[in-house]
Amino acid sequence: MEETHILDEVQSSQKVYNETGIALGTFFGGPIATGYLFVANYKNLGKGHLSKKVWGITAVVFILYCTILFIIQEIVTINIPNVVFPIISVAIARQLFKQQQEKDVEAHIQQGGEVYSLWRAGGISFIFSLVMISIFMGGYLWYGSDRILPSTPSEEGWTVSPQEEPSSELTDPSSVVANLETRSYGEAAHVIVYNEVFFTQEKIDSIAEELTRLNFFDARNQKYIYLEKVLFDYEFSITDASANIEDKQTSLKYEQLRIDLEKFLKDGSVRVLLMDEDLEEVLGHFGEEI
Image 1 (cartoon, rainbow, N blue to C red):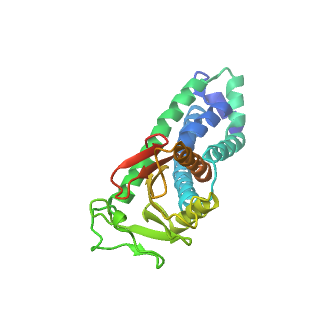
Image 2 (cartoon, rainbow, N blue to C red):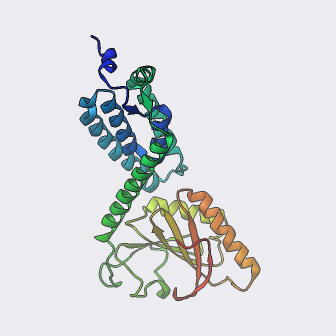
Image 3 (cartoon, rainbow, N blue to C red):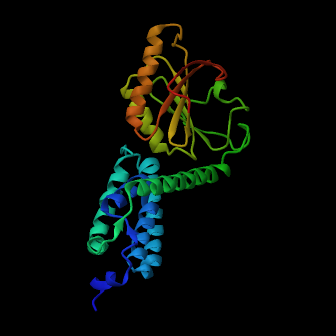
């Protein structure tokens, strides 16, 4: 008997995930959830021998998924909304379902077989979303832990652009960490200090170009920025001698700056801290705490 009749040997009491369930699981749970749902279907459709193959493909796809995310966000610096990746994943999962499982699932249903509820698919996707977050956080902490060690300016030093030496405000030994880089921009020699573990030079240059476009990096008042990245969010600690925090216009200016930067970066929230000249006291903060 041909393989299309294999469902005759499968108990109709077994449940399967339909196309909508797999799409829901993929959107919230990523490629790992997709692999799990496909494997569950194969087992309940009498094709459990394909499980190892599916898991192998899932592992490769997940690695590619993470690699593409890293390249786009940290190297190429293309501003793509985060929701694009789940949408693409859902489209691919739907197509694979139509090619590999749709006929068997329809035959299963016609023979009286049941379908798992969307609540179950949603619950599974939630679990796998936590797994993905744990993997990303673990990789983030592991990647940075060997590189972010306390140091002083005399140890490995800073890479400083020839336009401007780092000011005394930014060379406090208590706040300097290894792998700091300094870039300066424009006639006023605006300074951005960042950790090369979390930012590429191209990313910092693109941020400086946007600050120039917004007229924040002007030709008169020099600005110092210490830029940090906390998971997917950004924190700008800024010293600006021309800023008067008691002036309402200053608060409006920095809140608008935060909004504009968040629109530009797109891949995370932005918080702006207006600091004193010693980078020790916060004069004003804009945006939710990261």
